[in-house]
Length: 250
Ligand code: PGA
Image (cartoon, rainbow, N blue to C red):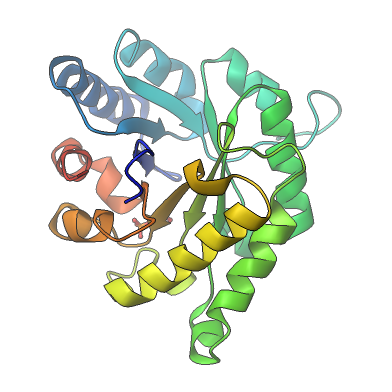
């Protein structure tokens, strides 16, 4: 952990939850966050259908709101899409872009991800830019070159440490219960830190780890050098579990 960087614990709810579930989860997190001094920032990224209701549930609490994707332009004839400025209007301060499920299921590449991140910046939001290698790429010894290419290709010229967060998520670790070794995480995060110093963001760019983070492994992962928080999927759907992860921040 870089001492000067306040960690971020982000919950990616993915395509889960009816209104009652999402409001109950957000209400419980907000209740806890109002009465505890956390050592991290706490972010929830519900599906778009729940953003307005969750915004109400977390009002006047330290919990902040984010979305899971945005379009590259602010408005127009784009059926089914949602722009960053619309997300900001409903109370989002963050938006995830380039998650591996979008890269894989929707064919999103680095250039498009970079334009989405730029759209987030134009709407005064923080872009959480996801990257990470597949299992085949890791087996080929290509992990560092893959994440470097994604880092360079997915960060727009507007990216700074204040408006951008990187989430390193090995594709094979997402939802699988499998996690890289501490040394493997440390090696990727050290490389990302070097890239941040060379390219943009420097020492204060937040570098999250994501992929099968849960309460039982969070403290260990969050203590690795250059890990400035976590992007949590499945375990963020349970208030007790997600709260325990947030409390694991050093
Ligand atoms: P997981 O998902 O925590 O369920 O592995 C992480 C993510 O996809 O962001």
